[in-house]
Image 1 (cartoon, rainbow, N blue to C red):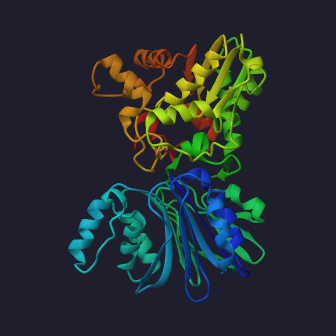
Image 2: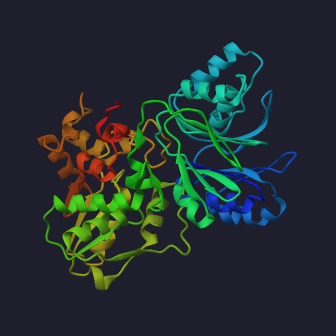
Image 3: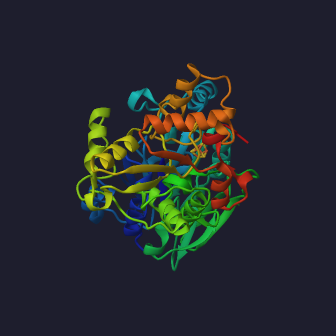
Length: 468
Ligand code: SF4
């Protein structure tokens, strides 16, 4: 994934930019960067945030960065923001998304404009942000360039462009991820996460629609290209990766999780002593479940966060599993002899969940019931860059289906239908594989009811494989 943040102010904006970008750290684990216009040039800094947090990497540099306009980026992929000189002038650019047809766009660009080149990034990949800047530079204005890029890109791409006069903000064409404008006296900002605003003194002013483009300066913002018709915002924002304090399309993440957990509890009847949440995003769903079921909420295990930073991600699977286990500490007094139910945001590969359940059984839990806050993930996301599951065959639901069928089925429809026999078989197979006492998944209708916005506007592709 990734996150972007920008600010334009009448005064120095660097501290707002620093904290505002840092508040997007849950969206990416690879690179963090900031670019600030200092009145005559850009000051830019990019660091790896693989083994330490964003703030610690930038705090020593803050005294040397000054300016009233800036953009910041947290990225899982390429280093950003990039700074560019072109016929449009000097600018800095940061993006969030996934360009599925990047090689085709590059090949077309080489055909049409013989005199361009693209820098190769790690693993011979093209830098997606650079590709977007190349598309923009071939048009006569930033607006035309952004519109062209949004038309060409298959996948999704939200864009911030910092110029000496202000920031262009463009939400991705189908609004899969959010982009929200905030304001305070003498300053405007734009964020992926609206939860960034209150502590920095901003109030939410306007949420860009799908494909909409706005230009911000310290005095205000102007919509320079209206929203396009169709919206397909990612449902996973509320279920898993959005920050609890953020609100998208009028629905706050934490509130959605309480509603979602309550709906799961309404459809459940299991005899348990305590409800817990798998940290961090399972917690809101579990609180909702506990409130509705009247079974007490508790923390039968705790994540040891003082030294295990969230972003620490060893390369090999054995060490990853070991780290996952070491991070969690059971509380024997709350686990031993108890029937426990945990809500998790989702079950992706299942390896981490299986480790957690083992840990609880080793601490003498009597039963461990698992509730997934969204339906089984049967399809990989093709619109956003998720590092959680690189291959669709890693998905535990796909592995279960393969076990049942002995091969890849021609259609997954029945496995996406909770009323079908095959769905029941798949859930039982996953539950057995991961050693749960019982397993239930939230259904798609209740999840959409918890989100509460027009369901036609919400992307649910990874659960039902339906693109429209
Ligand atoms: S496929 Fe899933 S993760 Fe991807 S945008 Fe759609 S709902 Fe979100």
